[in-house]
Image (cartoon, rainbow, N blue to C red; front, side, top):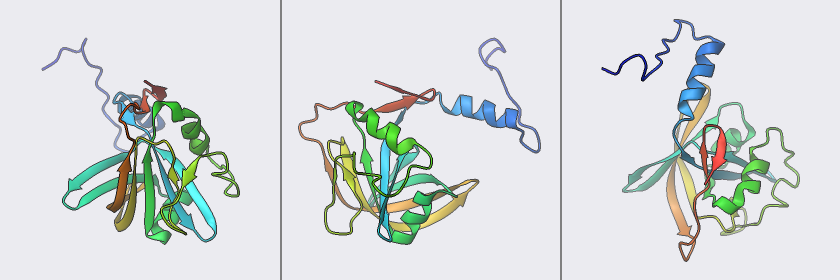
Length: 177
């Protein structure tokens, strides 16, 4: 068992407090995470948000889970559309991550300054220059605390060629190399 000098244990209250939430946030940011953009089309608008909580969960069939804040426009857009895109950002795309990570960004013109393309009319936008992108069909949605875990089956994908790009990562609430 590690000594108390090596670790600082935090036991959560029976009814978690703001201090518990702050302690969790601090510890959960100690893992470097890749940065991506989730996109969907709902109604006549593009929806997009920067995410770090996504996970490849199966190769057969290729399946990815993304975690989206339950009360966000993007969570509704993805579940309503039944389809979404996930673009994995490169280090030179930090500006895109910052822009799409802003809360309350207006829907009209959201992607006007973001180089993107669509595989077909009405498809979710995919970020040009991304390390890789995935076009996904929603196969399940699960509620977990304040988030929706959206399970998507990959219908198409691509990667940047040649593989000279490096991933944009987030660690300790900041972007890193």
